[in-house]
Length: 632
Image (spheres, rainbow, N blue to C red):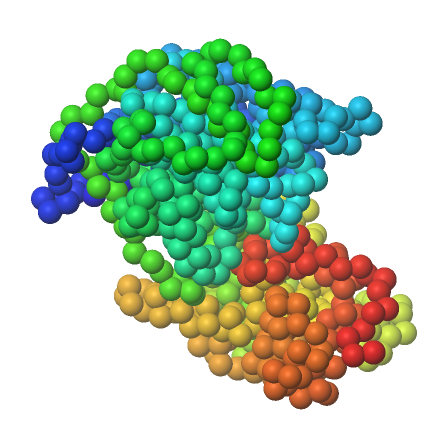
């Protein structure tokens, strides 16, 4: 196996064993191609930095003997670019950077290596303009760079408009499949959602008789999505009758995290190679592909447009429902490959808790690094949520950049203070104690408050302390509320909800406990001290804002609560559906009422990494002013 992986500053190169090697060109004269899938981390708006990354990874691919290297969707601009797409200056910067990149790659001595890279293009005004013309506008595009220039381009055909995606708002769909003849092999270019839907580009690829489809992706992570990808790519390979090379980006972008998991599947659906999740990786693999014209074209009514690279495209006036096929033949021959066959290998799959932990640490790390924060600060209460957030932060950016603050009040238990100190000792994070009772007393001396108002006052004083430390010392404040609490409004606005980022925003309470136990077990298996005190895991959760308070005073048992929340929020189940599933009507009514009334709080919540099929924010968008109630 040959794989070049970058895990932070650590890079490993693994060579195939004797059982993995074969001489090139041993399959009855079929053309061979060494392909590299560059599963890398881009940053939205950093066009120069992203282009530099393409040059670095292309050099690595060339050193590995690759003849074609593919980068993720919108590699040059980062993804998603959201309303940046409406700025003409941004689109022009993307277009210009693409041409410059092609020339720079040639100047680097890499002009004979075909490079597929995603960018944003335009053939018309943004839809926000009154002069915008139907059928033209902004394009989610893929380009093949070769010989110092942009040799071919393709516009994404299927535009997702569900979940976190708003691509109908931003882009116009392409209607032409680009097929590039390179080294005697016909290769089709496609982008992300094209692989998620039947018909369109992959059906056109079969009609065109291509040997390989390159699909570049920015496919966000959610739990077990890797289990969906392989059968999906296998279905598209069968539909196209061709090998599919699927490359996905890796990294965090605001609330989204991308897990990589790049895949190569042959025309029969056989898994040839697969990258690991959550790390940058260069997957290099030798393919034997049918020669151009060996695979018969399938009869179809769609028009075909043939030109040589550099010629203008004409005659597109009339089209039916099928995609047109544009054929581009590149001059010259592929850079030679010598030596033994390279087999990319299949990375081992990881479990659910490992997936989620990797997503949360990567999402936090990239939010911190890409936004220029030096460090993070959080309230360290001794409870399970703050302990897990602290452990995530330590794993993400190191203990020297994590600051935990214990802020005891008159109702804080001795064991909670001890658990917070123990957590700090176990992980090595910076730890301090800032008692809040004198500040609370100062407020109470000037305000006549009682009951819930006094409880919330304590939380808000803690929020003031954390934000003051953020202003004074430059930390990013991490809030620690989990998805269950956010769902039912079990938080104090401008108190425990204060902060710039929330690693647990999409993590239900029951999963928080699973993650804590998993992380401790992983540490023990490696001979390290578990980072999370056992008492933080086993004691009943409590906000400790009044004597003897526990969460169970205000909320149903978390096992039941999370089950109802999953049905109502993630699966859009109604009241009758939940009752039919076996939940008590009184429980359902209580939970749904809490969720509906808390929308105004969620609208003001900090961003946090998405790990589920429906996260609060980008995925689930409901009006705050809303009188519809289930069952009424």
